[in-house]
Amino acid sequence: TIGGPMVAKLVNKSNSRSVDSLQGIIPPHYIELVRQTLHDGLDPHTKKGGVSQILNGHWKDPLSRGLNQTTDIPILNEQLEGKVFGKVAQWLIHGLSHFMVDGLDKTDFMQ
Image 1 (spheres, helix red, strand yellow):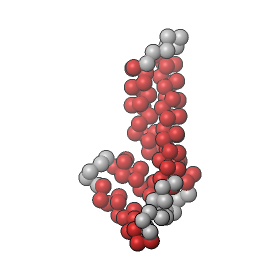
Image 2: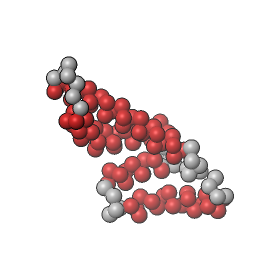
Image 3: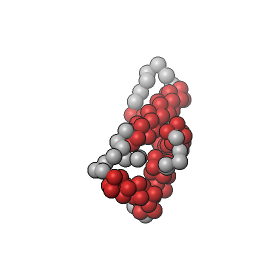
């Protein structure tokens, strides 16, 4: 664990209180991301699904639009480009959700 048993106990106590401390500092969907990743009662698969759902709800469309506006695929019309970039956005979000959950679990932060 991080810094021994006393620090680990403090980290565990802090995990449960982090969400309340973040309100008013960051948008609610980011607070929900923190809640999902720090939830001791959820297995990693469930956490990843929850993180993906939150990110898809808030990032997929803007990310897809941004990619579509800045990147041209000459052989595709705008509508097909939009579908392609929607899938790219989903793939990026899926990877990010795995990185967030797996990365946190590997740090010993969740002991």
